[in-house]
Image: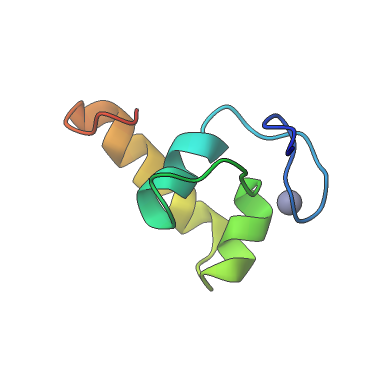
Length: 66
Ligand SMILES: [Zn+2]
């Protein structure tokens, strides 16, 4: 059973926004998650772009995951 508080790829502690953005971008039903750095590598986006997306979803208030 995966520990939800660490990245399953590198083992680093997850940022507080890593779980909702992973669900949003990769798999809404996921039970294990990547940290933002690994997610950025996985989806070939700069980390800064992911952080902008997180800000967008957080501020828009329209996404149930955030
Ligand atoms: Zn990681």
